[in-house]
Length: 308
Image 1: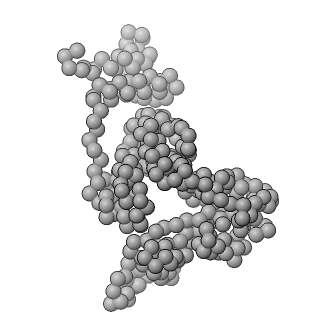
Image 2 (image 1 turned 135 degrees about the vertical axis):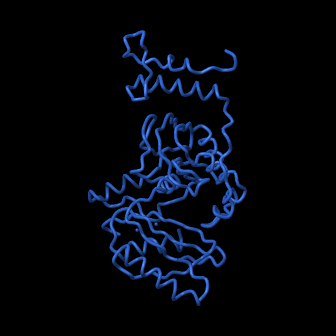
Image 3 (image 1 turned 90 degrees about the vertical axis):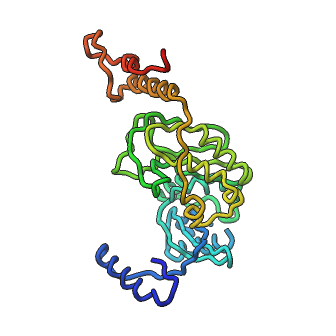
């Protein structure tokens, strides 16, 4: 709850306590400074048995992990007030966050590998002085969700999913064509990460990667991500935790501009691919072959383009 006037404080605390008690059986609260236009910054940290990452914030992140006797990989989060350049501790997650590829690409360190090696008892083979930031990296989370409807999750089958490839592009995903996006798991489809010599280059690469991504069958934030990347504020780094709400509150996905014959051709082509892979695609029955052979082209006989 956000309290902007002292007169609202007591009521807000009471309501928050009642909600916390009902939900968790514990009405204790944390009070923290509210910063209307904040930057949310995360630091990946590694700690081995002998003791460790950017100037003041980096030292604070490492100090927090060290003070807790923390061992292995973790993520320390801060809120930064851009007006005063002051930062405030938010939380520490005792795991790698989904943004860890950003750190890996700019620092040249495989954090997931080191997480395993530290757990196996190995000491870090580098210290803070060995780390250098190289270039700029951007990560986009490709989600099955509807940005035009409060980012509500979407479900459905991935009729076609083709990952982008190229220099400076990394894709982390666990799904493929034909998989189902269900209500039982997080609707994250893939993480797209682009690395370049500077922010402008990273944005260009990310836009190219999104343009090369094929994702059909579910509603996604694919177009929304491109509109964010093309915004002048994003290119200049003038964004904060409230920027999306201000700039994209009325965002709507553009209407599909593909001709219907292209959509039909894509669907039929995918039906063939899925059938060849043995997947269930609600097949049509070819009666001329005894009623048990799948024929995607028989299903296609229902479609007509123009007068043909």
